[in-house]
Every structure is written in structure tokens, then in C-alpha cells.
Length: 356
Image 1 (cartoon, rainbow, N blue to C red):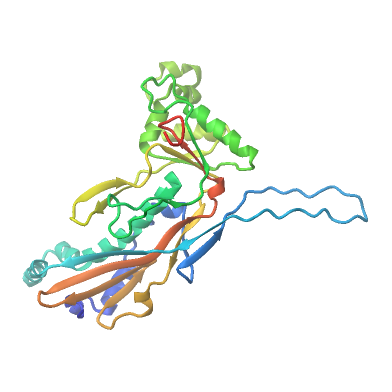
Image 2 (tube, rainbow, N blue to C red):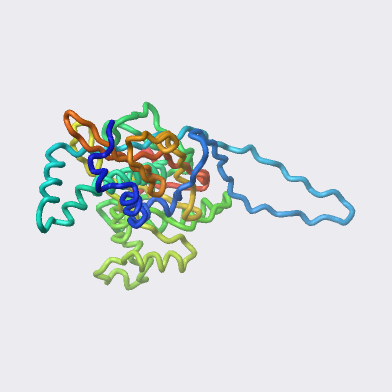
């Protein structure tokens, strides 16, 4: 391991300035699972039980009614490592030298070569966390297989203890849209949850599921009344949400996140972060966290490595010789955790039961 070949350009101040001034947007998962730093790699989360307690009416000069303390459910686990690396070959470095030697170099090309790998590694780490978080929110479990991960492969699902799962009364993708009942399903689940003290604030679904919902005759009539049969344009998200909220029902957020997975053979597959068909009901936007902790490289940085941290991602730059190579890596110790898993309800809209 040697100092970065680009050290003359990526001086610590230059790298630090780039990282400080570079303002990437928030990851989509942060709305529901914001980042939370913890001091250790192991964690234990007490699952919140939704409660609206009431005191009692009593006579004066009597003892206070003592209430019971329910058993606390907990989820424990270990935060894994999220890692990615990009390599610049001798050919890439020669291209950089040619760009630099031009009297009028292509600035964007130079910036892409020098800083492109930094942006790639940062976004790759954040995108993996979005995928993990949305898998947890749309399936209640995470499965790491050869089709979605290089590294750890889970023999059994990582379970977030989301037990309130069911199917639709009629499949939302039924050919006859006069038979589908998305509004009925939403109302029924909201009513069921209220019996256990849970009131939903948000519904999450994919754009495909929403497309089935908006084409349903029931949805059209729900939004446009008796005139719905004559409507030639399906209600959009704004119209449906306006009507849902007006009836005391939760509004819909569309989750439309596609990410690129590169396997061991460097074949790239587009993966949808959200499990297609799942309709997820949340009591509030934030239902847990993406837990993260400091990496060993951050605590004990090698002398030959240029390092900067952006948000929760540690960026490292270094090189090797014979053959000459330049490397960039992104690292974060992080994993999603659902604190309100007992208050999350899910419907498989493509089947009449959760298992299909």
C-alpha cells in the first residue's frame, strides 16, 4: 500500500474541501429510518408498544391504582460492514495524464477521473443502506443472496418481527378492475389496527401497485363519486391522497427506488429496493433508524491512506505499484433497525394472503 498517486492533486486540504463543499442529497430511506450513531457494533432495541394509557377515577384518601408493566420485546443483533472499492488501472491513469497535459483540458473529464470514484463509493454505501432499509419496510425481513450481495449470504432471513401481515380481499392486479377493492382493503386494515391502538399516518407502496390502485373502479368512485363511471382520466396521487386524508385515512408515499447490483463477475442487474406488491402502513414517518458506528479504519488510519468522512461514509484513497493501481474505497458499519415493528402492518396486494 502506497500513498495515492493523485496525492499531488488530492492534497488533504483539497480532498477535505471537496468533501465539505460537495452536498449530495439525502438518501430516500432517511425519511423513514434516519441515521443514528451508536458506540458499539452490537445493539439491542426495545420494541415500542403503542399505548394510550388512562388514569382512574378514585375516592380521596385511597391508594393509587397500580398498573402492570408488560413484557418488553427486544431485537438484538450486530452491525455488519458495508464496503466497496473502485480501481483505476494504468490505462485510466494514462488518460488522466493526457487530459492534464492538454493546453485546454476537459475539466469535467479530469474531475470525473479524480473525484468520480469518491462519489461512486459514497453513493454505493448509501444506496446499499437504502436497499436494506426498504427491504425491511416492504418485507419485514432481509435476505442476502448471490442475486443481491457479494459477501455475506444469509442462510435464514434477518427477521424484524413485523407480524401484522395479510393479503388483499381481491388481488389489486386482477384483470377486471371492477372487482378490485384497494380502498376497502385500506379502510379495513386501518379499522383493524385501531382495535390495538395503532393509528396510521402513512402508506408506502410501489409505483406499480399505485397504478393498479388508481385504475380500480372503487378508487375512481371514491375520488369522483357517482360520476366516476364517466371519467376518462385516472385519479393521480394528489387527488387520491386528498380524498384519503379527507376521510381520516393515511396518505400515500410512492417508493420508486431502483439500484444497480454488480456481482462477482461484474455483471450489473437493476434491483428494485421495494418489494413489489407490498402495501406498508406506518404509524409515523420515522419508525426506526439506520444504526451506524465508527469503522476500524477511521479509528486507526493507515499512514499511506488519504481519508475523509462524508456523513457516515469513510472515503479512502491509496495506490499500489507493479502494476501501478489507484484505489478508492467507501466504508460504513451500518444496518437498519425497526423500533416500531409491532405497529407496522403490511398487505400483499398481489395475493389474498401474505404468503401468496
